Length: 445
Figure 1 (cartoon, rainbow, N blue to C red):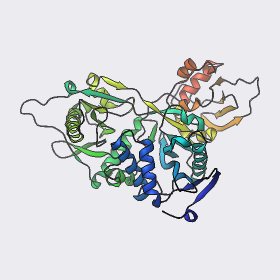
Figure 2 (cartoon, helix red, strand yellow):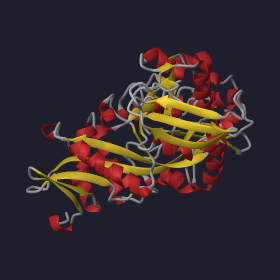
Figure 3 (cartoon, helix red, strand yellow):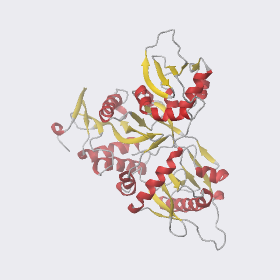
């Protein structure tokens, strides 16, 4: 362990606590801390500990070993709270933007409710400003991250499961038309191309460079909680037709795919039965290895996906999506950044060539979007006077649900009494600019 003098101390918090940055020398202590804080059982503790150790000691395509914050007792060096920041690039209708993903947020029970997490969020939000990460995204427990200006604004996961009766059976004498084999580094260009083509169905996508695919395949240690088994799907001629990724353990009593894509032009109806049989048999192997029951197979691919259509009633168990928490500290700046996408939506709508100002009441200010002949010429926050109710209103951070496609204005209007509109034309325009559209972001961890 480094001496206190060698540590990068960010702030003296008083009461014998310091806030500092991590280093590889923290691997043992921080792995043990996160395993205990986040693990639900012994196996889970080992998996979370492995994730932490990997981040600090193994090469990662976007993360540095200094990207944990640690709060420790000055006298003993004991870690009492920690979190980290995993940079990545997402796209909005193909427009890249930087994202900072906080993860592994935890505090010892006896140190909670002292504002320690807030101190660390303030620090990593400064890092995001310095690095040009204009959006922050986190997965986590209900409500908590709203305290730090985050809104549950984007679909997260969503899954469907089937059972033994829904596994397609091969006919007598029939051979498996598609087989799945472990992916190799030589498969990365194929996977990257298929991923890029198929993700166009979504508004929000996480970019995956060859380095990220390499990390998925060989960068994580065996027990890493987020490690995936990546498989290439081949036809009878050994030609690659798609890929599949799933955790190396059971999810809800079955092997569950976290990624499944086919080359454009392939039939999901033809390929998917082989994939289901693979998941069913793989789940049986995991159940035998781990001494757990297996009675299902599944696909954790968001609210909508082609495989759901291909299997239909053969996936009777549905789990609706949870949500990513998103923070956008500069909403006008983000809207200016994605202006080409908004202008394209406008051009393809009944409001093509629109000129005018759309003013959205966010209650502490007015968000104003100015259009000239279909072009977004200005976005700014205007001071709101008490009598100024603008064209429509969206309370607090709910506008992020519309910007990122999770909710329509009608849905927000039905839930929030203070989500209102003055003219129906304003609602039509807002729905054109920010239509409800499901996404399934495969983030970097």
